[in-house]
Image (cartoon, rainbow, N blue to C red; front, side, top):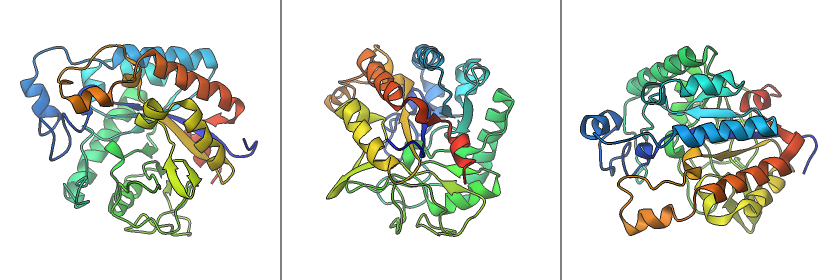
Length: 302
């Protein structure tokens, strides 16, 4: 690994009901999180315990990370975001209710620019009140992101976004991502292509491993499916090009089964989780060692 370039450790704080099969997309069981809570009367919190395990792990390893938090977690898991902040970690925004802003299939807008601006500002204010600190970063729910979103984030005072994944298998944006690889860059206004001109917000894209094709290696479900060594190959290669990120979800580490996880597709999706995923995260963090930082620390280099 390069001694110069850094890995920003990021944690996506979302619960099982934020999954796209449950809420947040045109194809979800419930329209959105408020609708879910209007109908769901059983236990819903599967997030707190694994997040507290993550905090213990990071403290043990003396690591500070960036937590991309869905703002409604402040209401539905009281005290959790405050506890993350008290641990010295950075709080960033992962949306108000983890709703997709563009259609996963067509990439057309699912809300107006005005609605996105209002909802994102509301989320920013909620998270800043809970953490007591400025929220500088954003990650699009389910990583579906558009250039017009970046422009509004810049207007709202965000300093960075970390949603773009360049690879040979899918594109969760409405742009061709011209000139974009795995290194931080300044997007063009209204697009996510590389603008090459400095502006008030920077994009921190996700790593990949390239052998003819570009294989995504940022973490998340890919970590569960393919393991730590696969992720480390992508981190190693991406670090040779520039700074990069790694991400994971605390709910990937729970040993419990989620409600409504009844279809064969969902059972296969969650076939690997729990302590085995926690051990994979530990291996990556230990291997990365002195090259670790928060996203805010990484952005300060630019």
